[in-house]
Length: 146
Image (cartoon, rainbow, N blue to C red; front, side, top):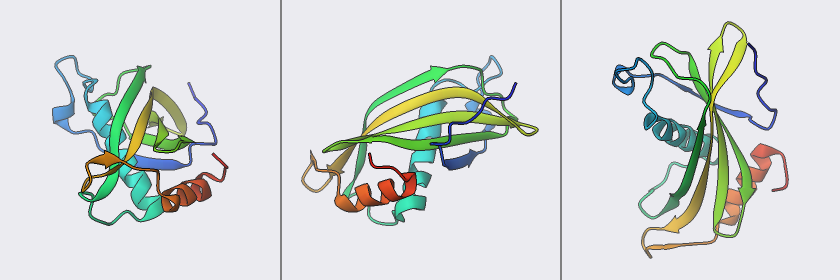
């Protein structure tokens, strides 16, 4: 039953599943996975870059999202989202996600996802180059040269 988490996934966000997330079929509705990715993404940037600033000035916007569902998430699952930056471009970057649950000592992958994030200047209302400070922090955390 144990799935091995690829070593590249170093960042973990623990999530608590709310009763409202569960649909009439007894599992988490698929629409909530994007919210789980968002929670993991915010924690990823808080942890590796200390993003404690005004998000209304300069930040990121979601350009694309993909989700591959493997097994349902249930109300009492011990749920984590693992996050990894797999690409940095000129104005955008990719984040990969694994939704996992812990069963005893085993990690079970319930879903895989990817988002394309665009660096954005809210004052100017346009995309910008990914700031060098962000690139440096991501590369240092991921311990690779993207």
